[in-house]
Figure 1 (cartoon, helix red, strand yellow):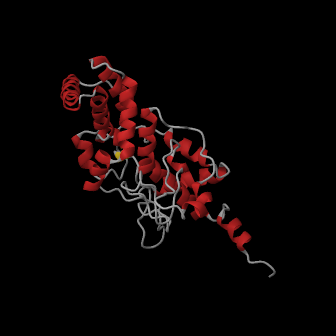
Figure 2 (cartoon, one colour):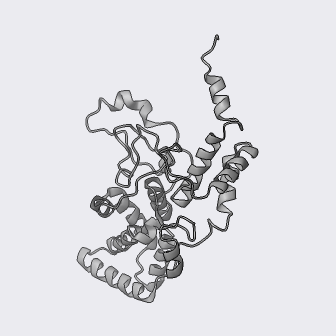
Figure 3 (spheres, helix red, strand yellow):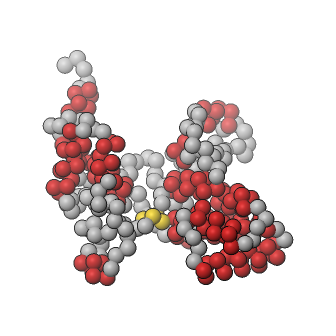
Length: 283
């Protein structure tokens, strides 16, 4: 009678006697790894939400999550070590016709990198990513910054996207084009859209151009196939096909003549690879 009951409510929500909490969480973990949860409506487990495609699996993961002491690492590890997670996204026509929406997990879902992962991946391949945790937040300087004309809280940073400044009405400019969720609500599943402004962002955004130039400077003055191969391995983690080598060499030659700068030519090729679907999608 003398307390609000919030502590008791929290203990009940996170107890084995309340399995919904564990079910909701493992479904979100599954959805993050597979692009779709076992329940397709992660924010609605109620009467109007979707039914689970694999109810026994959902119950098993929830029970295991509780038995392992609510360890997030354990539940993620159990999922990523499964055969299902290690399947490729490629499939044959017969399997695709039997499971066109991939509800029965006959293959891995091909999915686009989210906004934060795309930015981090670009910093990683350009060699500019600072893996150290960011220190503090620029918001602590808000009293000074809001009174300085033309000053933005969104300052360039080599740190991972998790350490950027997130404001309710002003998301980080490097992330906003790729379906960054609204900070006002809980979002269990992000929208994934394909819009013309995303292509324009990839072509013109100073952040992407800067990472391309960092890559270009790392290649020096060479225009040979060996350097092209190094660039492909660094960005796409594979060797170029013979026709790709020819097209890349032609791009370097023509762009170098137009701009008078070999560095700009390499930057153009690097940016072309960074904005390719192969770099932005996980197979």
